[in-house]
Image (cartoon, rainbow, N blue to C red; front, side, top):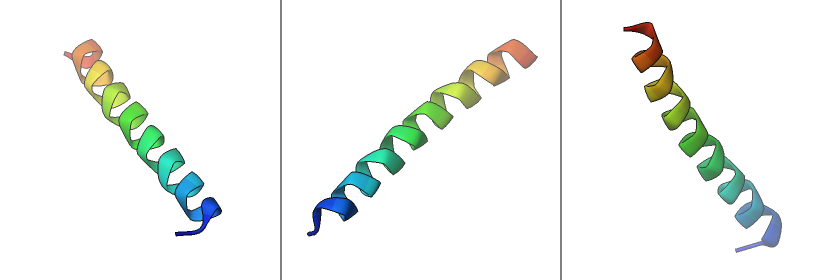
Length: 31
């Protein structure tokens, strides 16, 4: 597995985690 592919993969995972937390916080505020 090339290095750039691993880097992109980690960035995508981090972004997904941030999006997940952001959405749950947003829904709590919205209620």
